[in-house]
Structure formats: structure tokens, C-alpha cells
Amino acid sequence: MITRAAVPSAITAELLLELFDLPVSFHRCLVPITGGVTSALMLSQVIWTSQVIDSTANGWFSKSQEQWRDETGLSRWEQETARRALRSAGFLEERRVGMPAKLWFRVRPDAVWRALQAHAAAVRR
Image (cartoon, rainbow, N blue to C red):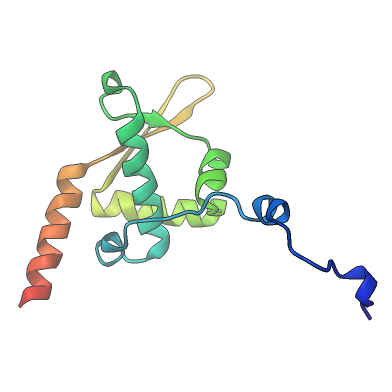
């Protein structure tokens, strides 16, 4: 049994800031073309990352499994499932480079755009 003395009497702004980190958001329009929220979340993060990297990288960037987890909250298995779905749909390219090998990613915006257009056309029918 929890006594009244064990429960904090008020939630302070400092406590809330500790409990609530930055929110993870994604583009809702990606859900129907990716097949689910997890894949849409990962694709949204890939698109955002692609926008903030150096333009000389030709769209390629590297992130570790831990970085993906920290940014999205997705577990290893959720990441792998989402990546598989995105590769299958043609939205994501991957390559391993270096020793030890690092995984590099690149979004295929043309494929995403075509899928969004096809979905919009299907919804209008």
C-alpha cells in the first residue's frame, strides 16, 4: 500500500521536463503507402535526416541502431521490419560501407512521391 507521504503532492515543471522528452512525430500521409505507423515513422525520420545532411553526401547518411532507437523509440525488431517494408516499397536504399561496416541509408523521394500520388488518385475514385 502506498501512503500519502510516498506520493508527491504536486507535479512540478522540472519533473515534467524530465519525464517528457522531445515528442516523436511523423507524417500521417505516409501510413497508407508504407503499410503502418512504424514504417511511416521511420520514413518520416529518414526524410527529415535527408533534409539536414550535407548536400555533398548525395542523400546518403549513416545511423546506428541505437541512434534510430533514441530518435524514434523503435526497437531493433521494429526498425528491421520497417526498413524491410521501406526497401520492398522502393522508398529506402541501404548499403554497408567500411570496416567495420556501417549501414548507410538514402530516401528515394521520387518513389515516395509516386506512391503518394497513386494513393491520392485511388482515394478520389
